Length: 376
Ligand SMILES: *Cc1c(COP(=O)(O)O)cnc(C)c1O
Image (cartoon, rainbow, N blue to C red):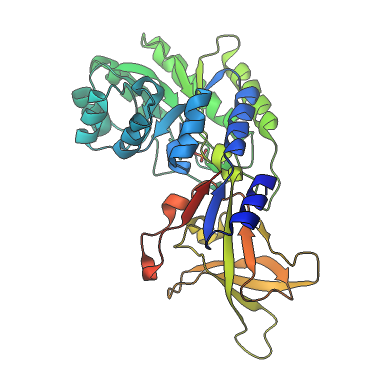
C-alpha cells in the first residue's frame, strides 16, 4: 500500500468497504509500461477502471483508450478525449452502437467474425479494422480464450474480405489472457501474427498494426516479472518474427495500469467456527463476490491481504462475503492464514484492487450499495 493511501485511510476514515486509488501510481504504471515498450502505443483498457479521475490522468499523459462499449466511448468523449484516440475493441457490438461510434468519429474497430465484419462494412465504412485471433490463455490467471478471436485461416480470409468490403484491413490483435504470468506467451502469438502478415501480403494486402493486447499483471500473491521483463520478452519476440520490419505496435493494458494503484478496505463482520473441534475460522467481511471481488471466482485472482494484527501467530481461515448467498465465499481452497487474534470490527485490506473491482460491484444485491470509491 502506498503511503498516500495509508494516510488517506487513517485521516479520512472512509466508510467501509471502499476502494482507494492512488492516481500517482496510475501515472507511474503508465510511464513504466511506456518505458518498457517505447515502440508501442498504449490504449488503456477502460473497462479495468473507468473512473473519470483515472481516465483524466491517462488522458493528460497522452494515452489512447480501448473501449468495450458505446457507453465507454461516450464517457471518454465527455472527458475531452478525441475520437482519434479511441478504439472500439470489443468484437461483439450492436450495429446501432457501431454507427453511433462512427458518427462520433471513431475509425478503429475490432472484429473476429464474418457477421461482425458485415456490420462494420455497413455502419463504419472505410474504417480501420483489425481481426482478433484466438489464444488459449495458457499461463494466465484470468484467461480470455474461446469467447474471443477466430483461427488463423479464418482471420486471413476475413481480413481479405474486409478490403473487398471497403474497409481498411489494418492489422491483427490477440490477448494472451489477463494476469499473464508468463511473458513467453507473446512469442507464440507473434509467430502466428507473422504468418498472418505473410499470408495477407501474398494476397496483396499490407497489414500495418499488431495489437499485443493486455495481460500485463498486477501484484497479487504470486510474484511476477516486472514491466521490463515483459517489455524485453515482447520486443525479443517481435524482432525474432519481424526482423527489422517492425509493424506499428499497440498494447491494451488494463490491469497492468490500474491494478496496483488501488486498495480495498473492508471490515470484519463476524468470525466463527462451524463446530467446537474446528480449527478453521470463518471470517466474514463486509465485501465479497458481489461487492466488487468477483475475480475470486474459482479463486482465480488471489489478492494479498493485510490486517492491523499482522506479525503475530496465524491460523487458517475461510474468507467469505456478507450476503445471504452460498456462492459469496472468497477463498476456501486457497490456504489463507490470518492472525489468531483478529477481531470483529478490524479493518482488512485487499492489495492491488484498482482493476476489475468497482464496476463489478452489484447495484444493490441484498441491499448493499455499490463499492464506494475514492481517488486521491
Ligand atoms: C480486457 C481487455 C484488455 C485488458 O486486459 P488486461 O489483462 O486487464 O490488461 C485489453 N484488450 C481487450 C480487447 C480486452 O478485452
